[in-house]
Length: 175
Image (cartoon, rainbow, N blue to C red):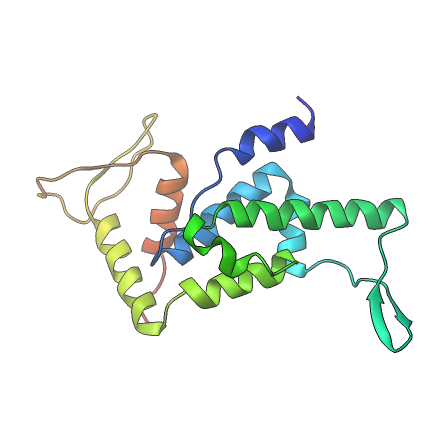
């Protein structure tokens, strides 16, 4: 399967952003995009290379890509932005559609859905509480639990959930 086919198959399973869960979505979308193509995540993280512009009669005009490298970079930018847009719920699509580069798009989505410091602290505490419950894992991987006599058991649906839970459990509780 070539990279284009792999991208199309994976694109049908883009993780969707849920209000109040930006931090988790960001980690999952980062892993997802890196699996598709690591260069896509580098474009989001570092931004695309500077666009070539030309001043025509006092108006700055963006020149289209001309070299093979510029065209490849533009294609990566479009894929990265499109992948992020697919993870945004339909009711918010119009709000973010005018943003044309992936790095800016992620920054604006973070400002909109990231929440304030109090919200983030509450989310961290909830996640820590969740990871302190007994966790039944997949494929014989064991997880330590601080609550040995708890009646309720939580199932981990997939490995990325387990990784995310472990990450948040290891973080200090200070804001």
